[in-house]
Image 1 (tube, rainbow, N blue to C red):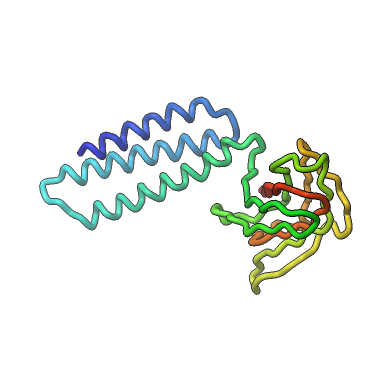
Image 2 (cartoon, rainbow, N blue to C red; image 1 turned 30 degrees about the vertical axis):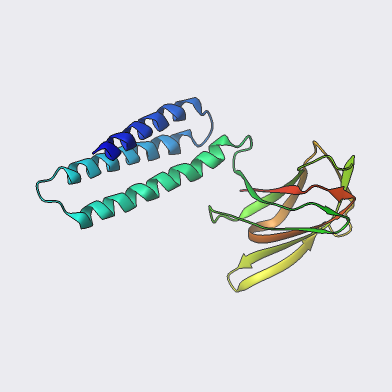
Amino acid sequence: MKKLTVLLFINLCLVGTVRAIRNEYTDRIRMLSDEILITANDLKEATNEPIFDSLEIEEILTELKDLIQNYENIMVFARSPYPGEILLGTTPGGDSGWLETLCSNPHSRPVKEIQLKRTGRDASYLRINDIEITYLTPVGMKKEVFNKNGRFRLYYDGVYKLSLPGPMMITKIRILVEHKSSGLNVYGVY
């Protein structure tokens, strides 16, 4: 019973937090928070029944966990200064070679654009050459190279944007750089 009370309190706090967010995700977050409260109330009622039905409670808990996971996923986008942007991965540092990252895409949505941002100030600029993207297709994995010999200068506060020819489910990115780098943050834009 104490856990249910804590859960209801947390959900009420989440509803209060939602009021402070002003972007396109607000309506979706409000709807989800309402569903979370309704499901938590269902859990309370099922727990207070004279006969304890563990299967029913387990189903309600599973539904509640899914709703909370969806809420957390939407919060990632709501916090982003660019709606629809999410961090896919971060490359380790390197000096004039390939920087590589496996992309974590918890929302399983294809991206239309990638953005590269530097993580440190090792040099005044970092030259971006080839960008090799491995992505998932209905028939398996496929690799494609973009910005071939592009030699784009990426300064510390700059952003390199690469529009993709179509939405891609990116699993891995390799970036050929010149000059020493502490690493790159790779963002996907939906």
